[in-house]
Structure formats: structure tokens, C-alpha cells
Amino acid sequence: MASISMAASLSSVTNLKLHCCPNYNRFSTVSMRVSASIDGAAISTQGIKLTEGLGNLPKVVLTSPHGSEAEVYLFGGCVTSWRIPNGKDLLFVRPDAVFNGQKPISGGIPHCFPQFGPGKIQQHGFARNMNWSVVDSESIEGKPVLTLELKDTPYSRAMWDYSFQALYKIILDSNSLSTELTVTNTDKKAFSFSTALHTYFRGLINGVAVTGLKGCKTLSKELDPKNPQEGTEERDVVIFPGFVDCVYLDAPNELLLENGLGDIIFVKNTNWSDAVLWNPHLQMEASYKDFVCVENAKITEVQLQPEQSWTATQQLSVA
Picture (spheres, rainbow, N blue to C red):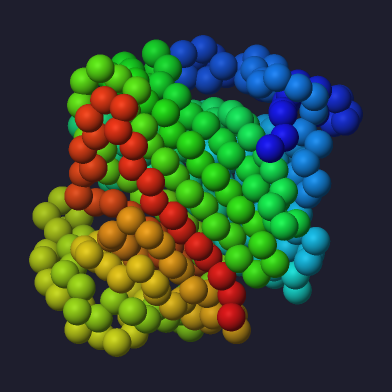
């Protein structure tokens, strides 16, 4: 495992402009964030580089020996790009996405934590608009592996008054991108949460098809988002002729996505248990034809006692 000093690693970034956010409890300055490090020198792991991204936000670029590449913004702990060796980027970032360190990044693989959807706190929780930190990097059999961490702050505790640690491991291989999310209760009292990886896949919506959900119980928000309609998925293949916003309970641990662009993507998971399909259709007229969201989720709340942890994995791979 590599020791990391993010401050040192930024020395290679010429004239990095540090972005300061007005609410310190929510967003520490980038300079303070990148200076927070564990012992040792700069990130020196082969295939992992810290650099400057859009909006002057720091991002980490992972590159495999086979030519695949992934980009991860520390703001939101958000994977925004996954390029396979032929150069195709299989993820999608919406054209209206902003990279200002204040609003969540609209695209890639945003985190929904500690709440999926609407509820007692802000939509999809706060993890997607907080700064994550790098705590480890390593190379395993040539595969770059990056681990990010998110902990409670005064900003998060103002909404959700618990102490927690979230570790997010990202593993890039030649034709796959894998993640592992571990949430630990570091508080003295129990808490519960729901969560999801809100993955945006690039696609041609008229040709998008998802296989593997037949027989699942569904909660469809298409008619009334505030009162989801219960049902059962009867189709072998789900297509997207219009607005789709549907939760699939107790979903299988592998789905097959045809993105309409000639790619077949396997979406595998352990311990997520639920799935979500979403395409906004005319609600986002400028971009809805170009993407689909196929999300691994934990809709039923996870309950953790002090010192307990919960872990779930996701693997995206191409045929």
C-alpha cells in the first residue's frame, strides 16, 4: 500500500487554482483538503495520478496497463469517466453539470447517502456534495486501486447527527470498473441509512435495454412520484419509450445493459439488494436521449449498531 501526501502530489500541477467555498463546515478549502494527508510522500502508485479537473477541482486519474482509464473527483467522491481500451467512455456526465464544489456533479457515479431520494434531509443525502479524501492507493497485479474516505463534519451532523466513516474503494481493470463501499458506525448510538450508486451510462435511449429484472417487485414513480405504485416486473427486457423512474426490490445480483451504442455492459453487485432505472425523458429534453441510469441501491434502510459496518460491491464490465 502506498503512503500518500496529496499536498506533495499537487506539486506537478502547474498554477493550480484553489477553490474556496463559503461554508467551511460544508466544504473546506481545496488547499486544506489536499494538505490533509497520511504519512509519506506523494502518490507514487503506478497508474494513479492526482491532477486538476474542471472548475479547478482536484481529481484522480486511474490508468490500467491495458489502456482503460477512470476519472474520480474528490468532490462528491464521484467517478465521472470510465474509458475502456477502445477509447469509449461508458459513463455520461450531463451537459448541465457544474463543477463548482457546491452543487453535486450531475453524472458519472454519484453517491446517494445516507438517504436515497427525498426524505428528512436533502434529496439523496449529503455525500455527493462533500469533499472526500484519499486514504490509500495501491497496484494489485497491475490494476490501480484507489480508496477514498468520507467522515462526518459539522455540516453533515447538522442534518444527520451521527458519527460515521465511509470508505470507497475503486478498482480499474482492462474491461471492468469495480467499487466497494463500506459504511461504519463510529458513533455511540445506532443509526440507519439508505444508499445508492446513481450510475449514469452513456447510451442511445431508443436502443437501450435492461435484462434481468423480470419477477421483481416494483415501486414505480412514473404516475405519481410522491405515491409510488406497487407492481411486479413482467417483461424479460425493459426498454425506455418514455419517462422511467422505477425501483426494483430484491433485484438479482447481475443485470445486463445494452446501451444502444453497440456495447453490452454487465452490472454485478453484492449486498446492494435493490435496483433503480431512471430516464427523465422530456423533463431533460437536451440530454435524455443520450443516457440511462441503472443504479445499485439499498432502499430498505440498513441499521448499524456502534462499531458495526456494512459493505456492498459493484462491478461494471463489458463483454
